Length: 469
Image (cartoon, rainbow, N blue to C red; front, top):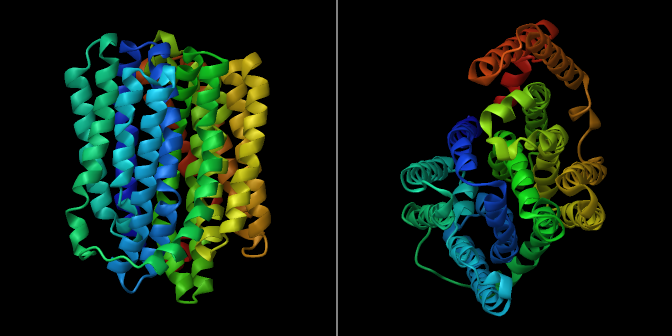
């Protein structure tokens, strides 16, 4: 039941990440223009490349190693040593870039440099490995709430863009800093072993390469939009990505909990139990993913009109396209981490991200100058489909295809389609907009979805109980 407790902790935080943007985004998009926010997002995407190098593949590798470690303190320090050195080198490289590149000399790039200090002291992977998600959740909750309160209190006009950027980053840094206090429960005084550090370095780099690849199609599109398009394109595309990422975090929160559990089961040679965990993940993911997709398509225009200001109405076109990323990212979250990484298939995982990354770069360079944020949106979906296809190919001999493609999936999609039809009929008959209309549509859709799953008997309660045990 520890998995369920951890998932509930993680899910409670993810629910918070849904609620807070619902409060802050309408406020922020009515203060800043799409160009203002696009400016911030563009430089943030550049800093992200340095952040990737700062963390290498420590987050995933560290979580897996801590989960299976007998001596947690020694394991931690010999992994953290790599993270600290990499972060220091990334910080030095970033300072050189800010000094030497003319366009990087602005105030926002300087403020964003604090992100690298945050990465240097980020030890969330220690708590994830120990399956202590309670502390991670509490830390993240305090940081998010403090940041939101400060934005509403201090950010009042478009001239406060620098302050807005600073508040977001400084609270994240403080959140990472305070995690070192409860870490004393797991780690002792620093002790390093050069042989162990060298031994850890190779698999960390193997996991780092997929992170670089992922960034090429998750972050580089914003960079290319800023270079080949405009800051306004970046701002519109980012808001669309942000809205779907809110939904994706609800789905991916289970993956963060399941990786250390599956790794632990495999270290104990319990392959059947690990397979059951993967099956449970697919069932739960699909129950969440498909109503999200069809529901967002149904209420897209009402939602965007209510949620965003006049400068961001074109976000609805982005949402119609990238909403399908929720499905493929959800599935690859299972295949990539619970199936491949948990079984040390790091090379296969790397290929599943590097190949689509290069495809993303080439396609974005071709389509962005002509289609702007629409081209970037289409490319992002194509790339996620490619990632899933490759990971499914490498997983085909590890798990049965029936774990995903089964009658339960058909029932879930059917229930979601009927939910979509119910919402569209309700919109046609009532023609409501605003908060009242949105709440009614969501209510009608939710009730229809639940009823249809009951009628179709999508969930076998006895089987779910067995999986949970």
